[in-house]
Length: 227
Ligand code: SF4
Image 1 (tube, rainbow, N blue to C red):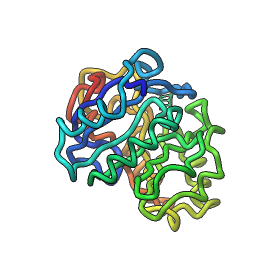
Image 2: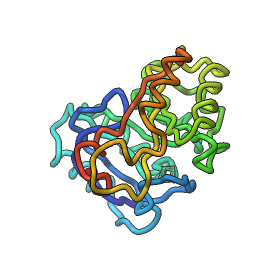
Image 3: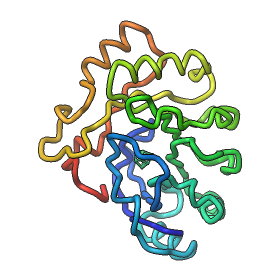
Image 4: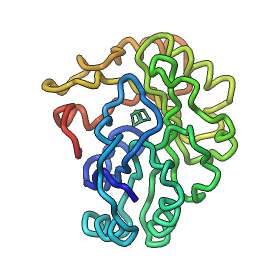
């Protein structure tokens, strides 16, 4: 597998936010979101075998810990990734998969918690989500919308209603996008959509979603990698 980095940090953007977590970040992405903060994953990385990756996860956290498979887009390496996910599950790890949902998710093992980042129009990848993936969502999965405008908010709100998302998954997350060149201050001034504004809209509309801030960007410098 082509791997950009494996590191331990605090899970920052789901209902698992705040928990220590080992991140396995796979190289490569087929999308180009405007606000992407992971462009360094598009190329490079290093080849690692499944035993090497598993050993590194074990070194960083004991069995029973939380592991997130992320990218880039991890499902681009599905053939090699599925056996790793099964090994992690069989060994007793709790495993999250962060994906855009552009690739088919039907073969993802049932016990993996999928955190599916449905792209909104202002990301420039708004039509990328494969609607067939709605059928393979489990009640413990999560759907995330990264929002940078009112248009994104309306798209996400309509999507929730149209597909009855609140009944399908454990959580629907609304997360304000960060400027990709953000650095320095660890506060919401870097958000493309003010969280206060987003909160006001959500309260006015009773949207069945959870406001989610990228916790790691309030703990460490937003430009810092490997956290
Ligand atoms: S899917 Fe993720 S890694 Fe790929 S361009 Fe979008 S934000 Fe970046």
